[in-house]
Image (cartoon, rainbow, N blue to C red):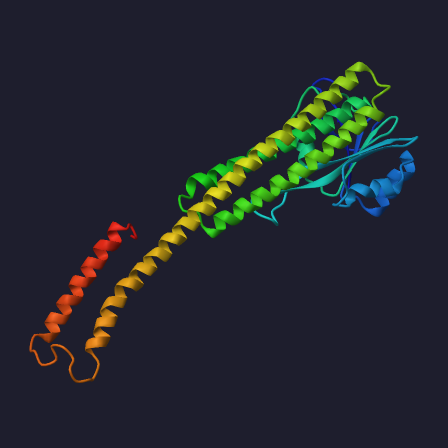
Amino acid sequence: MIEYFRTDERTHSLVKLDEEEAGCWIALFEPTDGELAAIAHRFAIEEEDLRAPLDLEEVSRVETNDNYTMFIVDTPVRSHAKAPYGYETIPFAVFETPHHVVSVCSRYHVPIVSVLKGQRGLYDTFQIKEFTSDLLMASSTAYFRALQALNRRRMQVAQVSAKPSRKDLEELYALDESFVYFTTSLATNDSAFERYRRYVLLGCSKEVRELFEDVALENRQALETTRIYSDILDSAIDHFGLMMDYDLNRTMQLVATLTLVLCVPTVIGGLFGMNLGGIPLSESPYGFVIVTGITAVILLLLLLLLKRLKWF
């Protein structure tokens, strides 16, 4: 699918176009082979480069060509297959051509577009470097929104679950997996930003370089926030694990206490229940009462001792 966008001259917000216009943003989402071939032919872009972001394992990188500059970054998307609140990252490619910005992504619903649609003060789409900085800044904003959603869910699980269940722990592990994706992707994005700054922006104006410094700074802040939230989540998982280990130990201790207590009447009943001569109190009419009383006294003393030892 190919969609076209441009910046409104009055509000400087993003608007969708019905057809291509000069200087617009050309966005390819889940593109077909025919669409890729058409864009490759029109803008003299290598079709292999256009297909690169469709590979979910593609890493963030920057490459320059005589006709275009390719910028691939990882951007966050929801992943309902992993967990209701899980996230993953996918490649998002931006191609800077002489007169257009072309982007390629393997999924249609990406937060970058929704972030841009909700913003004002965007640069005109025909300002190639400036609008690219808006796209990359929108990606960092999408990370922050995802991080806030993950952290809110983490707090909900931690506050509601006084005694965590297996389902709670599985959800926390899924959230932790999302943080791992974010940490890795933001770190590789930072390396790509540094390469772009060193090799692509050398001949650009001071304003463009400052814009991109803001983009790189926002990405680093997102990376640092991700690491902080990840450390907090790891502490919560460790805390829940310790709570479950404590409950298990208490349960095993209670089972051991019951086993020890039940051993006393079992042993006494076994001794006095043997079918042999010479068993004490076998001829006494009060033998059963006496044996039962002795057993009760021993049990009481044993329970008091275990209580003193804080076994239960």
